[in-house]
Image (cartoon, rainbow, N blue to C red):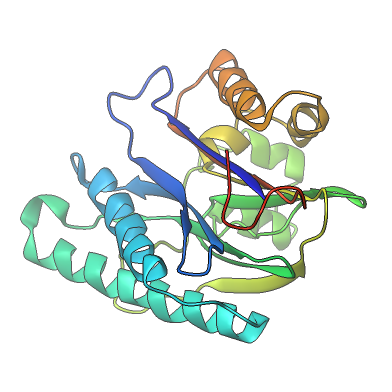
Length: 252
């Protein structure tokens, strides 16, 4: 396995309210996370950092995940814990009122990958079948597309594009999507905030990921392209590639 994490403030925003990273459990298995915070003055970075830290601490203490069922239960239970912590913090700290965060998280093992998401941060896979989005955006425009009220083309420039319908920490209870896929040799996962997906097309992502560059260079190229195309938002990405000559607990 090889993995790289990169975050960038972008060209417009004063602060970076995104968080993310790749973390190892006691068995050397990976947990990749991207969280895009929102709400209140500087409260977005509080929400995304709380989401990240909560999962990171729990993952560091976790033993081997042996099945997809275990992975799905781990994500559900511990993301719910994070939701409770963020929600209670927003009630108790006035400047954090109404804060929340998207989250996309993936448990990556040698046999499978289990992905959970809330909001519009995404997970994609590049494999022998091509490049495809694995997560569904919990956003207003995606719901309008899904119900046939607008086209995908209309969605690209819709004025309500940034409105999310689900977020971590904004309500006492949270619903998330969870799925498990097979993760095989040479497959590549891309997790990202909408600062990337709103500015870089899937075709452009595919071209960069398929290039002969090192993983770190691919991440840098994706961030640079998002900035070149406007960079109005924070940009955060994680790329994980399955390479058998890299042990599970080793990364670049």
